[in-house]
Length: 325
Image (cartoon, rainbow, N blue to C red; front, side):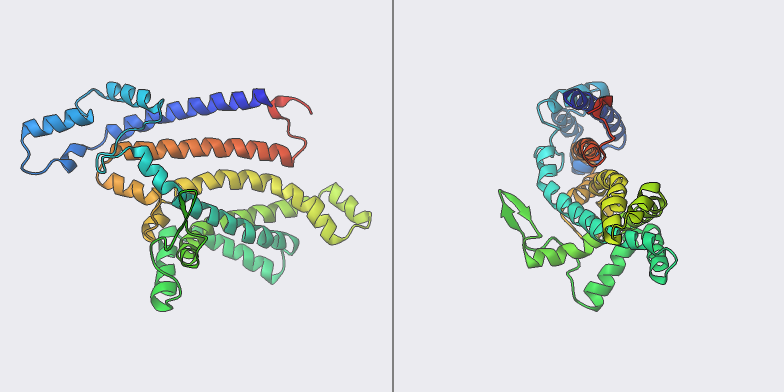
């Protein structure tokens, strides 16, 4: 176990280093933030002083060296637009994004597993076919279009839910949370559902395929032959094996929810990292963009490690580091 963790940690550090190199080179080689920040009446000397203050007068390789040296001390640069550390901006928005991603993941799990299991157990019934048809819609409909339809129907036409914002929050150990208030839950419902639709369809189809495969295996037939109840067979034998790939996929997809909540946060004006990223790209705020990508990749790495550990806990056949227990 310790050897496995050390190996994964070394791999994680290598991935983060390579990612930072690619991202820094790509982001800093495109566009000129000076053109966005310098006032029209600024002189050439003013522009030169601002470039020197921001370090933009240095070669790209030297800028990356400074960035890497500062990153080792937890400093990912200072925002050009807000003049505060980029990490501070990211961490201020991180709770909102994580809250939205967790809510979307819970929706996908709570609804996706029962729907997929039912469709797998009753594949030829009307409800089972309807579930699979609905999952195709979940894959096919664009997120931005669904979000706009949600706002049009539930906010504009019916007036049931607020169209934008995060609503009232409650601070827990200094972290603002929306789900602890009724107003916050109302603001969260539409963006969370919009973000969850694709994952809900994915979990439904994955569970349905796993159920169909598990029902044909010998150990399930043997369990039924022993006289076990259908609920016992499904809960102890079918569902347990289904959860192994589901946990893996959900863990990986949770990282994608955090990273790609940009569209949903922009549509619903949800004050998370995704909206901050769009605002930073609009003004070419390079440090914030790089910090966002670094934080996101780090989250992906940590989530992958957690998924590996959960996978090993669910499936006794898995051996960490190739060693038998």
